Amino acid sequence: MKTLLHTLLILGAVNLFSSGALAQKRNQFSGKYIPPFGVISLTGGLGAAYYYGDLNDKPVLKGLGPAISVGALYRVTEHFSARGELRFYQVSGHQSNSKYFNDNLSFRARNPDLSLTVQADLIAFNLRPKVNPYLVLGVSATYLNTKTEKDGTWYSLPPLKTEGVNYSRVPLSITGGGGIMFQAFERLSLGMELNANFMFSDYLDDVGGKYANPENLSSDLSKMLADRSAEIGLPPKEEGWNRGVGKMNDIYSFLQFRATYLIGTRMQARERKKTRCPKF
Image (tube, rainbow, N blue to C red):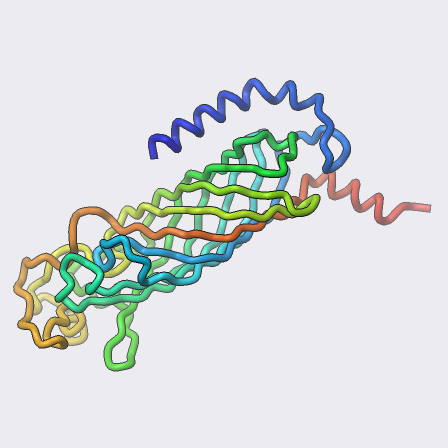
C-alpha cells in the first residue's frame, strides 16, 4: 500500500511539469491537443472474485465466483481521473480451508459494491499511448448478503447474529490495484486489472470472533447455524472458543478483463454532431 501511495505522489509531480509540453502535441483522436479536464470514458469489467478470510485463510483458489463491474472515468489531469463503478461479485468459503477445519462452517455471498477511486495513468492522456499501465486507489462500500446452506435451504446470516454481534451490513474498504490497457480501436481500449479490497470488517463470511453462549442468541435457527459441529459428529463448541482464525479483517479481490470506451467532452460531442448533421 505504501508503494502505491509513493507512486501516486510521483505521478502528481510529473503531471505538473508535463502539461505545458503536451499542449504542443497533436492528438490522433481529434487532430489537436485535447484539454484533459472533463473527458469522460465508460468502463466495464468481467472476471473472477476471490475471498481471503476466516473460512479461507490458505492460498488456495477455492470459492472463486464471478465479478462484474460498470462505471465511468472523469479525467481531471493528463495522468489522473476520478473513477466510479458499480460492481457485483460472488465469493464463498468453507472451514475445511481454514485453521479450524473441523468447525464445519460455510458461506456464500452475492454482494453489490460501489467504489470511488482515483486512477493514475503512467503515460499522459494526450500522448494517446497504445499501451497504458495504471494504478487505482480509493474507497468502496459493499452490501453483505451472506448466506449459508442447510438441508437444501439457504439462510441469510447477518440478521441471525450467530456470534451475538450486530455488525454493519454496509462496511467500507480501502480498494486499490493496477492494470494495463491496450488501444484496440480509436475509442476502445481493452486490458486486464487486479484489484483488492481491504475491509474494515471481519464479517464478509459471518465469522469474525468467538463462539457465543447459545442462550444469548436470538433464535433456534441462530443457535443451529452458529455451531455446526454436531453435523459432522463432533461435540458442541464451548462459549469463548475461537470461531475465526485471527484479528485480520476479510479481503475480497477481483481479476477482470476490462474495457474502456472514450466518449470525450461535451464540446467534442457537439462538434461530432455538427459533422454528422451539416446544415444546408
